[in-house]
Image (cartoon, rainbow, N blue to C red; front, side):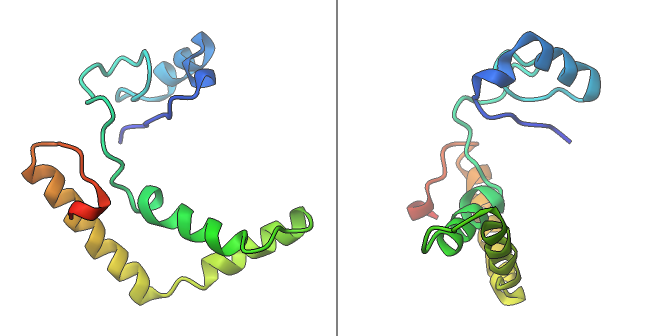
Length: 114
């Protein structure tokens, strides 16, 4: 397993880098990480990145939640509304993204080009 960080400056602080170096036997991926061969601007190919968060956000924020409890309830409801057939479609699409990424030698995979 590799742990990949976003580019947030807080993740680049010395104390955070030291913690990751101690906790992860395999290299972690991020700015100033020991794993130097990760391609810059590598494609996000996980369903959470290209599908799940956008779907949940669209459902939860159709109208502005009034408070934290309502926000949490909407998040739970949005997650429960995702059907098994929909998850299967996402899985098939993710496989296509990965296969295309391999075919084009780890190049950038855009949504419209799959």
